[in-house]
Amino acid sequence: MSQQSIYLAMTGLSATMDRMTAATNNLANASTTGFKAQRPVFESRPLYGQGMADRVDVVTADDSADFTSGPIEVTGRSLDVALTGSGWISVQANDGTPALTRDGALTITPGGVLQTNSGYPVLGRGGAPITLPPLQTVTIGEDGTISGALVGQPADQITALNRIQLTNPPPTRLSRRADGLFQDQAGNSTPDASVHLQIGALEAATPTPSR
Image (tube, rainbow, N blue to C red; front, top):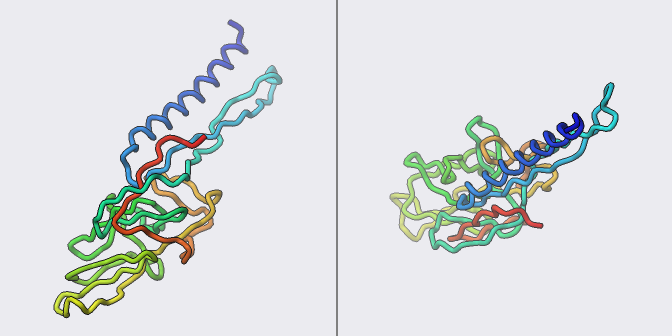
């Protein structure tokens, strides 16, 4: 086998391994709420130098994602929310920076922090994590408004407490973080009133990239 043939085989194998890694990750997250499948983007790049005029390297140029909305599954749970169409829920990553997710399986910690099932605090007004007072009941509106009856007040006295920061940056500005969240490369995304939620439902994963 010629040196050129060996080189072509090696670059092809590298690209195949990247594709298999992405496929394995997609399969592993098939049941992860709101997961967006990895879709590696390959491109050919010529090599320059003595004896390399006829060689081309195949590299993974980008780790893109399939932003197709997954099927919505009704759960009936009041703290489960699914984004209807495009859009994102703003959260605080473990490093303290703002990030984006479509995981709408929300919980309230004993300290009142509204967070995703993975433990990321949900951001509200002013881009700050949402901390709720002790409540008898809590509801989330389609626009992300959080309301509830405070402990010690009449059960029918409902107070608007905060509003989930819903945003919708263009997909071209999004990049997947190492923790699985997404990041707006232009910085912290601004709230978008056109993004709405379906309450009592969750978005299933889209593990297979659309063709």
